[in-house]
Amino acid sequence: MFPRLPPRLPPRIGVTTVFPELSRPVIVAPMAGGPSTVGLVVEAARAGGLGFLAAGYKTPEATAREVAEVRAAGVPFGLNIFVPDTAPADAAEVARYRARLEKDHGPLPDPPLHDDDHFAEKLRIASGVPYVSFTFGLPPAEAVAGLRASGSTVLLTVTSADEARRALTTGPDALIAQAGTAGGHSGTFDPAGYDGAGTALGLLRTMPDAVPIVAAGGTGSAAGVRELLDAGATAVQAGTAFLLADEAGTRAAHRVALTEARETVVTRAFTGRPARALRNHFTDVYGPYAPLAYPAVHHLTASIRAAAAARNDAESINLWAGTAYADARPGPAGGILRTLAGCK
Ligand SMILES: Cc1cc2nc3c(=O)[nH]c(=O)nc-3n(C[C@H](O)[C@H](O)[C@H](O)COP(=O)(O)O)c2cc1C
Image 1: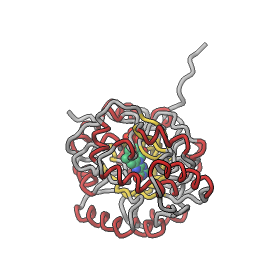
Image 2: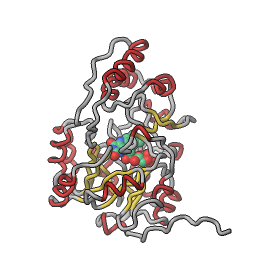
Image 3: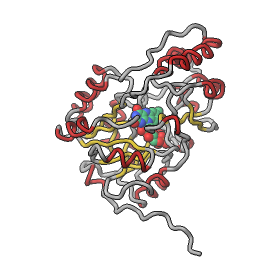
Image 4: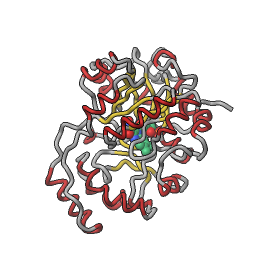
């Protein structure tokens, strides 16, 4: 009997074919909710990598301001946009979850069941931004074509081979293959079926050959980056590894929790969409009740999370983290990026 070999590796597509400005094939992931800052993105570029601004949850005005600030710094950069969910949340399920939260937290505001995170305005702002990535599903093919015509390189986040096939029908320049090990929300097109299993290397091996792949999820070391590049990734995107960076906007309580011995869990307790986070009181107590109802649950828990952050209480905030969180180190982002890229 011969051992079963892993599928053939895709031919290596060098980083300069998609990212001509990069001298180091490491991308600082977009991290909505605070961690991504203009400073983080600029420092990533100055270190030879690439950073993404996170448009998620922001107003169009704030997004445009950040884009203008990075442009003024004269470095390559990306902008990440959430694709709005078209399936409306179940109002009764949201009401039940609200009642459970209110038992402990008092009256909560009525959350909107749907919002599109200003998708159309953000697409307009993205026009001509050097790199534009999407998560939470597929943008319309016309949007991909429009951005490419404006000079942007378009990247789509996928979490399985099937999603990759569907993504390619919209004509992107590259795919971001995000594994279950990744910190923060999964970009899965099927949140109901998502279990958070699978590594970046395993997912990379299922990706189509002809398209450049950015591998993401659970990478915290130079060895991890090297392994993915050797297996055919064009570049590696890491988020959690930069959460302790000086330039990151990570909250103080989140920073402390990242240095503690915890485990990560996939939870929809905070937002109604599966995301990997450090386990805390909130994930333990409310995780079992949380419905699939993004962004309704995001809005529902916002005041609880804001109050917890104000009192530095790590037990009731979303401590997004990938499985390699113990490798995260404080320091300047450029140093973290160079370390991941294998520079001594
Ligand atoms: C705090 C945090 C926020 C994130 N926010 C976003 C986001 O706004 N858009 C996005 O496409 N991905 C987001 N992600 C996922 C990253 O793009 C990336 O897939 C992930 O960080 C890779 O896994 P790692 O954290 O183990 O490196 C976020 C991740 C973290 C840790």
